[in-house]
Amino acid sequence: MSESTRPLVLKFGGELLEDRSHLATVVSAIGTMAAQRLPLVVIHGGGKEIDAALKAAGIQKHQVDGLRITDEASLGVVVSVLGAVNTRLVAALTAAGVAAVGLTGADGGSGLSDPAPPHRTVDGRLINLGKVGVPSARSDTKLLMTLLRNGFVSVVACIGIGGDGQLLNVNADTLASHLAVRLGAQRLVIAGTTRGVLGSDGKTVPVLDAGAIAELVNDRTATAGMVAKLKACERALVGGVDEVVIVDGRDGPALEAAATGAVPATATRLGLKHLVS
Image 1 (cartoon, rainbow, N blue to C red):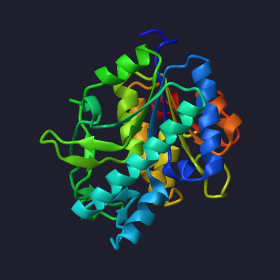
Image 2 (image 1 turned 60 degrees about the vertical axis):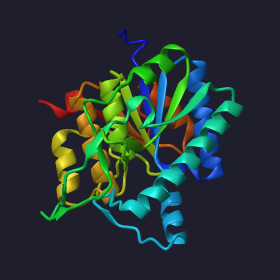
Image 3 (image 1 turned 90 degrees about the horizontal axis):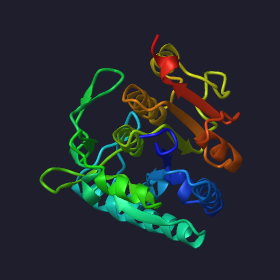
């Protein structure tokens, strides 16, 4: 696969897609990238919309280190909300002239997953995550590759599927990292509502190496959600993705710049050369 045909994987936090102005920024940026004929795969989460739906259903939210603990009742809510978010994003992209296709990880087996093992917290406890999946090396990317070759932008909701057909909740950063590796992506861009990775002084850290990541995690400067994000970034880089950029997705120009390899002030870049001596 040549450099020009290696895909760009974009992951958007659900918080960017529930706000009308942020959604417009995301759609505009994806439209600009698509117009440049960049091969794109988009992964998204559900964010606060899932939390609100759980509350409305009288189901208590449980998370550990940024990972959602999911029982059967919670899973039904997660699947429903992610489906609605996916349809809304695909509709907005289609209206903007982007050839977008809405998918979940169940489609084509792209998100084939194994049940997640108990999660070990930073303080050493083991927590059962319930109906949560970890993407499997057996996942099949043929559908995504076919869509890429035919000029479509795949928009994938972070729902996985077990070998027995059981739907599983998969962390969106984890799924994005996994698919970036499996697709041979040149770059993974993770967009949320923070200005990249913030240091203890509250300022954006422009570049991170392995030691700096460990320090952010160990001294708890990195929030729970950011810990999971940083671990997903490392897996992508070790798996062969050239570069990962964590960027403020509310900033359209920064988002577009990150997609082309530039590092705007609202972004943090992680590259293999920074992680391996």
